[in-house]
Image (cartoon, rainbow, N blue to C red):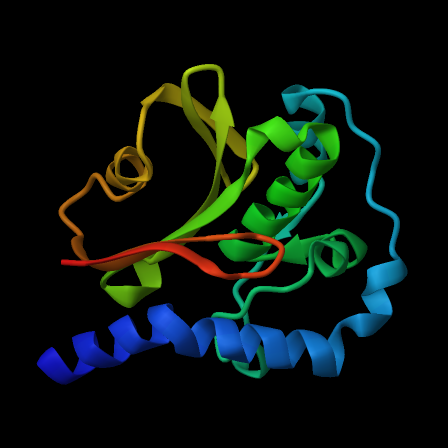
Amino acid sequence: MWLVSTFLIWWLRSGRYRWSWIRRQLFECRYLTTALPEISSLEEIEACLKQVKWTMDGPLHLYDSISYPQTVWAKKKDDCDGFAVLAAELLLRWTAAADPVLVTAIVRPTQSSHTVCAFRHGQGLLFFDNDELRRGDFQEYGDVVAQFTRSAKSLICWDVRNPTTLEMIEFHRL
């Protein structure tokens, strides 16, 4: 089990984002001209996300790559990281003050690992969990992780990334 955990920690720290960058460059540049919807509220962002169908990444994505938001919108399907990156881009276009980030938690079993879009709202944080806006008293990104990993799942590690550059903001190994 130690070897699997070590691989998953490496994957979240660097492998996933390198692969996402390579995959975007090779297969997704044509989607960058896709127009994203104009929005003016959180409710409109949530309505846009409800138009996207959740589907699992396949082998070409190595089951875990992050697409451009334009790709997600053009295809109208993706997994949790697609919802998160689209929500982040729509939030940035609505108000830069939201300061959206991607928060990913790797848990056991790994099929239950998850990515959300967390963002500043008032004095705290809110997050989009796929197509649903989650409200609560979240003060730190760790509070968000605790909310979406509440069950008996075993948390291995989690990170916070800039949704545009995929640069690391925080990384936590447990």
